[in-house]
Length: 231
Image (cartoon, rainbow, N blue to C red; front, side, top):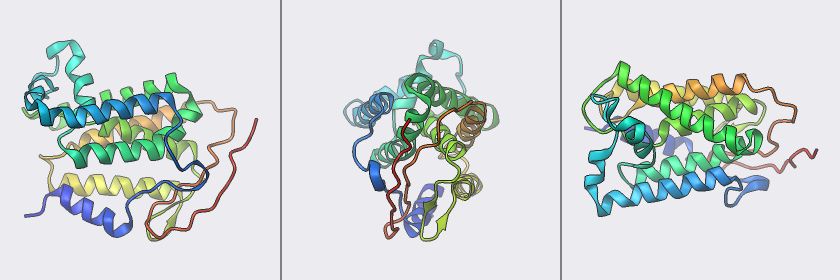
């Protein structure tokens, strides 16, 4: 039988996997984003060499073990190449823009607060004794913060949609996955991280205009160049 991950992956492929386009195509500029990407790269590959590293990862049935270090380790560890590459892709797409808007310090705080809240939500609501690994909750916080900070920048699957609709589609994917297969993927953690991103972004008092690039989601989307406002 198809798992929730397979089903959602197929839906995203039909709608068009995210890609970066426009004025800012290329490597991420944010220092924190680059550091996180290096960590995700190492955390994705290292388990292939030493799979026993998962024994040190965070487990919901032992929430206070290791004085919080397992939570940090689990953020970088990933359960496979698709898992790691997917989180890295969304971090590049949305996290780099949010870091430029917030600054490195506040962006790092957003990522790890989203991860912490998502982990707590998964622990309280779902429990379990398997390692909880991946940066998805933190990346979800970056994605939803992007939507709040840049609500007028459109995204595209096969159809053009505004950022709030993009958020609605993302939430729908999470709820669908939770309904289809609540045990194998931490969808509650994704939602917890996403809610955190929204709440944090809503409290930010911004003096600058929102990021000026346009992100296109879809293999056949037409991208328009829009220069970033200059101070």
